[in-house]
Image 1 (tube, rainbow, N blue to C red):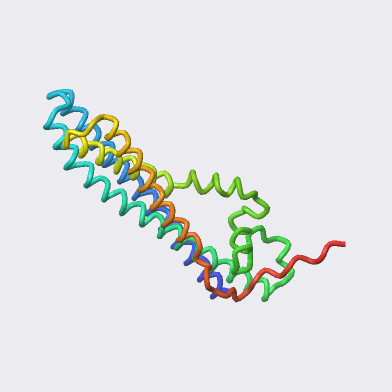
Image 2 (cartoon, rainbow, N blue to C red):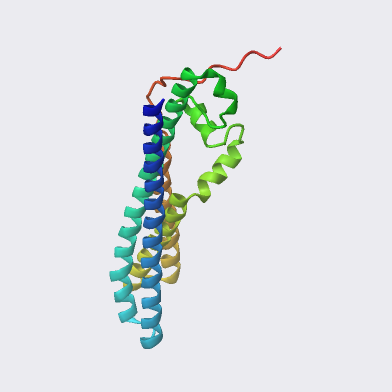
Length: 212
């Protein structure tokens, strides 16, 4: 039991560290983005929104976009790592209950290493699919992905402006770029949310007893 508890505390510490990193990466990205926008606004105010502002924007925004992609990728990786840590702690709780089965009624979190057990640990058991979809759309990686897509759209619109394209072409190019980048990033995130794909649980949740 002491060895299991030591492992449990180690997993909790690792989980805390990756979430601190998650918040730090999102904060750094948004801070750099804000500073870049302020720099562009000051230059535009001083010189007018002309070639200098456009040139600086085409230098700064791609760099910020790459930083945003790096932050987004790491955030998705952190979500996957956190899922694996929760899975590992579920296995430890299963071991606790093998040692002392009478404790099961006091456990709120799950103690099985399948999808249902992880959902129980996240306190989402019985949650509707609509609520799960809403939860997915408001989490940090999705927000960063949306900002990245908006940055990509702004870069394409500026490039079209430099190429003397019409205003309609700039708007259309920006919208198409936003949708494509956002869809690609979210597809990557959805694939990463299936870490149990192709694995066999060691301690699966037993089936519900038949209702009379």
